[in-house]
Length: 218
Image (cartoon, rainbow, N blue to C red):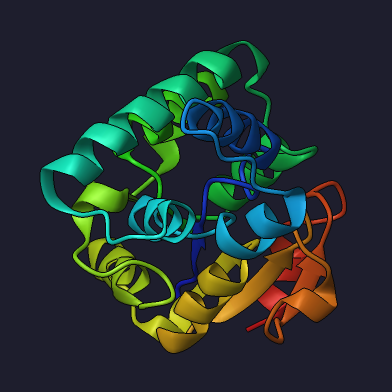
C-alpha cells in the first residue's frame, strides 16, 4: 500500500505574491512613525517573520502584549485594505491543488500571518473545502523557525513528519519545516536558492508541477 502524502503550504509568497503588498503596508505604517526601511531591510527582517519580530526590530524595542495586538491590527488592516483588490494565486496553483486533491493527498496551510489575512486569501482562492488543516499565528505559541506550526499541521492531518512536504519561500519558513523533519520545496518568490537553506526542490510557480512529480520526492 502506498504511504499517504501530506502537503502543507505557507501562505505569503507561496499561495499568493503578497510580499510587495506587505511592504506597501509596512511602509505606510512606518512612515507615520518617521521610519523608512529599505527593501533590503524588508527582505532580511520582514519576509517570513512574525509581526512581533518585525515590529520589535524596526521600532528598536520589545513589542509585546496589548501593544503588539494594537500595532499588529493597525498594520494588518492596512495590508488587507491594500491587497484585497489584487488577490491572485501564483501561476498554476489552483490546478496543482486540484490534482493533489484528486489523488487523495492531504492538504494544509500553515502561516505566520493572522487568521484574518488567511481568511481573506482563502475565500478568494477558494480552496478551503480541500484543506484538512488551517493554522495561523493565533494557533501557535512559537513562530517559525520553530517547527510548532508544521508539527501541529501534521497532527491535524493525521500523518508523521516524514510523510509531509512543505512549500515555503523564506529562510525562517524553510528552517521551520526542516526543524520539523519534513521535506521542503523552496518557492523562489522572495529569495534566491542561495538565500534559502537546502530544499528538496525549487520552483518559481506551479505550472510544471503535478502529483506524479511530488510523489517522486518521496
